[in-house]
Length: 598
Image 1 (cartoon, one colour):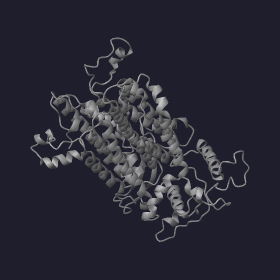
Image 2: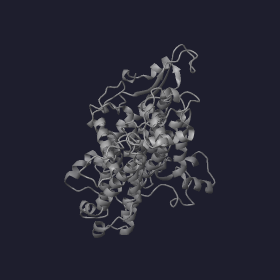
Image 3: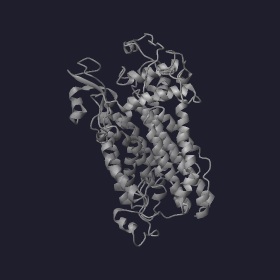
Image 4: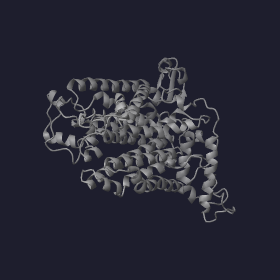
């Protein structure tokens, strides 16, 4: 089932290079039938790896074939050369089934592995850790009253006392984050109670599903089931993703909706290009490519819904809306240009920009406003509804046609904006975004020092910590991978590299605008999937294209496999710090590789 297009087995040197149509991730060499212009900037850039437009039919260039799957795999699909060399031949019916459904079987298996990591011991530490003190209680309040409330000072102690009643009181509280993430956290509390497992359950579920999503997204982008599974595996063993999946904070929820929006846009890209190729009959047509309406695009509307849910979890989703909206428009430009449109930007401006704006921006705004339904539904009597719900009642305005609820919400948001732009209170674990990619300053979510006989401590002094930090070797490899992807995007015009760089930029670069604000490394979890995609693309390059020589594939596959194993080893080494296990103090110190990690 891993046979197709560079998944595992080495191919003979005589096989035609199909990497551009579904290889292991490395762009195919420049085809001799597509020479560069004899003079000009293109020729000068060949020294840096610039590649001309790929060869092949228009349909193949618009939508490279997918690897094995429903509608693709033939019943007589050849057995894996690797298994045959090992003396294993499966019944043809079983082999056909595995190949046909490998695109789901592999990613689901990886997601199950990720789920085991995230749900095992999810209720430990049995305590309210870090900012769970806000979101676990806000989530409970939303599900019981529709808006956040003020809690008694001893609420945490009462909540953690077995058998004690939750000290709920309906007095409104001022909060600075929208409600969607807290509604999601509260769903777990409704199912399993107001306890650590309950408020972490839904986030752990989203963390697990995000691994499945990334595996499927990577498979579609790289046209390789193997690389899709590698991407899912790498995300499942990232420490920051694991820690945030096991903690009731909002940032993992933000990451989930960003990744979902990205996945829907990738689906929309393939679907729209397939429709374009079908309408053109596989032949470039300048007039039709310029004037063709690309039609109904439900996946892009779904992406707009996800962007709205991102913004309705944290406002950082606003940058995602702008970046993804621009990305999908540029994809349309590329599709029309490839189809032969003489003025693709003009065609997109005339026919695609407005639908894209409605799908991504208007839909996301509608979803965002609707997410405040609990606040809207609360009473506008003074002190009896959500915070600020009564602000517009009886207040004069130059815009009486705007409903009082929307005016009150606008006022609420203006105060929240002031809070976010002036949050400069120092914090022990704050960090500058310049240090994030090298893991300069992680965040300690929980720490205690058990003595002999306490919490499983078997020596004189132990440590028990939940440290919010990425798997170091994975992140440091990602630095090299990002350089490689920048080169691919600039000189090979590889849309996959551009797409993952766009996702990274949307989640990372905006934080540089807030150098004085109190920010933390765990905010970076929103772009971890794009770091993983970059590393996966580098691994694909190590493996090599499907048409490479047998020796090249063996050496490349061995190097790629060794890299993945080293990352997994590095994850296992830090695993006690990701999950709050009790370890000897000396072992804890051995894992503090830098003073800034303490």
